Image (cartoon, rainbow, N blue to C red; front, side, top):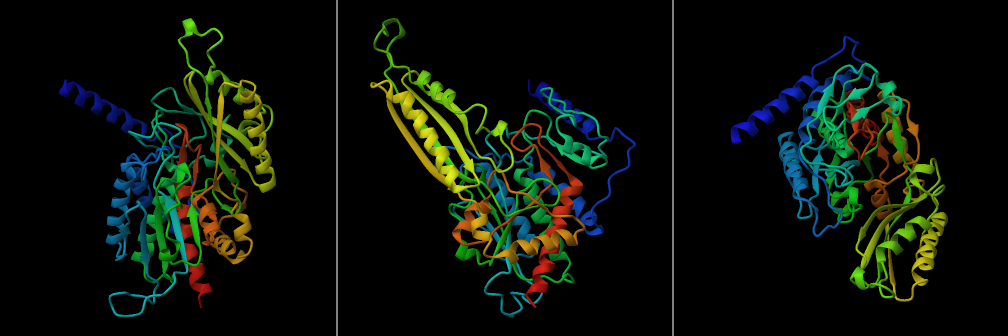
Length: 457
């Protein structure tokens, strides 16, 4: 049996190696700069290594981090940061990794005084989404993508440019996917790898002018807890940037404001054979609440741009008790509150019609639109825009239909816009990322250090 399993595993590995073999003579796409091209090999190696670690977070968090795999990756990163010469690289009791890359004028052990406050910080999150399978990730590199349909080897998963037009913009790029039955983990291991490669490059090239800046990797961002235990004072940066975006050139200083709502309906459970006039089916009532919410408006699938939504993403339970989990989102605080009130009205209308049922509605603030905190410090976003342009990229200013650690951090007093990573189709088995775009993001971090070095003069 052991031999059979080993043979089967070897066959899978051989199959995946075959998928990694180029199948086209198409010319490989150029990088955004020689800097990005020089960073790319290290970045690719790191990314392929990091995504194999299962760091999927767990919604019912009992401790921080919510899962042990995040600690495995965190310890790896601490070791690598220390190998770059970042002497204070550390993992704290809550699963946060922090480190300092000293500026050209700060040498630590040579007795020279360190900067009291870092010019800026860069952050990415360790965890991956619980919305799709995250264990056993087997990444595949599709060299010089030819613009056609990418057929993955498992579960019939396909990446089709007919439904993913952004693929057509990446002809000639080296694309990374998983094998079809798991997410890839580009959200946010692309950001993790980009920061690590940029810091490694800067540490190895002291001739590049840079200020002192801080690095952090956070746990449990995907369940809304990434910044909940983050020590801003200890971090000691004047501002920060998350690498947690998507399309090449994205620079975001506006996000949704967000609530999570948990609706619990308690009924009366009775043996169905004796249920006449007695049973109050909580699961049926919960389904009526979901059905009572707008189906043609205020849903993620029918809205875009600046329009918010109410999104039920989980319905579980029994006839005795059922629970609906929802997220409520909008860019406008007043509209957000109106969405919550609509949910409340629908839930009460359904449950109050049955006096023997009980309704509990728990609405929890998750994060607020970062724009209201960033508009008072425009120089923070301007520095990122300058860095993106220095990499030869046109910045794309679009609001995030979601949130990042930067939403909470900005509200807590650390202004934190968001920068692209080059990943796409997040939270699904169709997730993919471009090596060329990821290298551009890493190069942008290097440019950002140069921008803040000039600003500090």
